[in-house]
Image 1 (cartoon, one colour):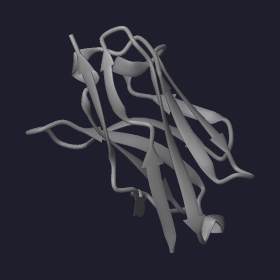
Image 2 (cartoon, one colour; image 1 turned 90 degrees about the horizontal axis):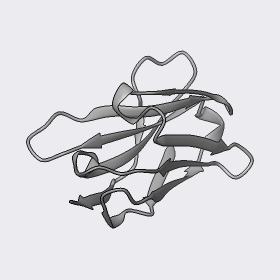
Image 3 (cartoon, rainbow, N blue to C red; image 1 turned 90 degrees about the vertical axis):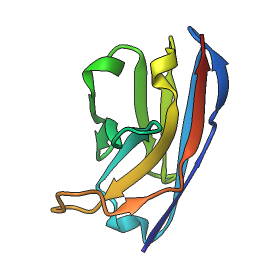
Length: 118
C-alpha cells in the first residue's frame, strides 16, 4: 500500500502564502496521479488540484492562478504552493493519490489544517 503524510499547514493572514507538502512512502510505484482536496466544517470534501505523472496539472476555478501544484517523482513528494490566500480557503487539506486506471483516489493522507484570518 501507499502512505501519505502532509505537512506545512498553519495560520496565515489573508493575502499571505503557505506551501503544503506531502510525502509518499510504501508502494509508490502504484501512484500515477496525485491531488489535493480540502474540507471545511459542514461542507463536502472538494477537489483542489491534481497533477498527472510529473507535469500535467489541473485546478478548480476558485484557486486557478493562486495555487500551484508540483511533484517530485524521484522524491515521491507533491507540494501545493498557495498564494493570495483568502478566508474561504480555510480547511483541512488532504493529499491523495491514485493508481493508473483507477477512477477514485484510493490513497489518502490524514490532513493538515490551513486557517486564513481576515
